[in-house]
Length: 383
Picture 1 (tube, rainbow, N blue to C red):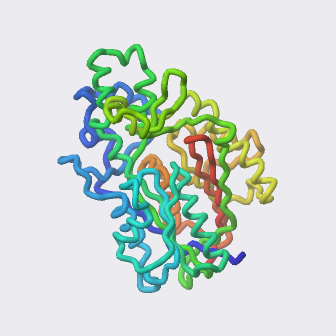
Picture 2 (tube, rainbow, N blue to C red):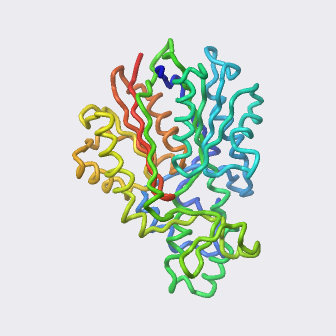
Picture 3 (cartoon, rainbow, N blue to C red):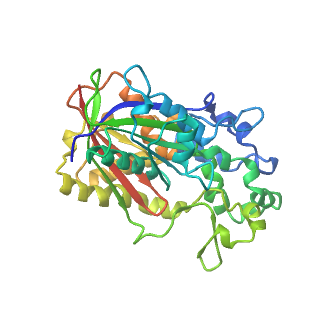
């Protein structure tokens, strides 16, 4: 397998940043009533601003996922590189614009790119790094000289008040007091998720100018065989606790039961996320890859909330892999939780910060709560 380098990184965040006191103006109020969960969730997640594709006045989308992703890809082009050289385009997202064609094809079409291999990876937060691993492998195998991978999310379209008709009815009937899990099952994610896109160029040689990031390895692990679903969309749980897929449901339920809203089992998440995405997998990776915590110069974690930061640090300490706080780099509080795009947006900021020096090592961490999966990537700075 040949060496692979990330030589360019680009990010695109739509429109102006939305501050905490502006969120409900953009997303709308369910049943015209202020959220009972909003302030509690915002205090916990620590996010101060985020970006939405929605126009703050009309509340109509100004970008599709494909057009937003295309803008991130276009940011890679300059006088030294043209999209016509790309042999593979791999795009990951949780929120494609269409059921078909896939997101990579729609992004390629938006760009007007010539023929190339186009692959879309689905999932939740890991879909972005899965796309990157596919692109990485095509270059490492010698199949392509240049490959682009992307991660993107357009979460706001599913967070609009119109998507929560049944919850509005429950508030009108004051049922929410008896069923607080409604607020923290679906409503709480309205204050957690946002929009954005990122793209990286991978090639078989480092850049002739400035720095590049050599991809040492990318490890992705899933524990779906031993863990139940935690974050869902497009399904409804019946009285027996079984999930029914949206195509088996009466279409009248799609809106009435907010079937397509993203929902998370917070109790299951809190009890398992650190063990299954940090402790258990990283112990195996340390043994497999022979890495040591003291070798890491920057730790780039994607986490959904500042609430989990100390918990993840404690998990690292429990397995003897403590990373000092000053080595952590994240922009969650300023750029929001953009799911599969987050690691791209974090990398883009650090890559262009002027802080990186040759020989430094970056450990990237991407957890996913869908059915408990995780991803780790080790990069080395080269000049």
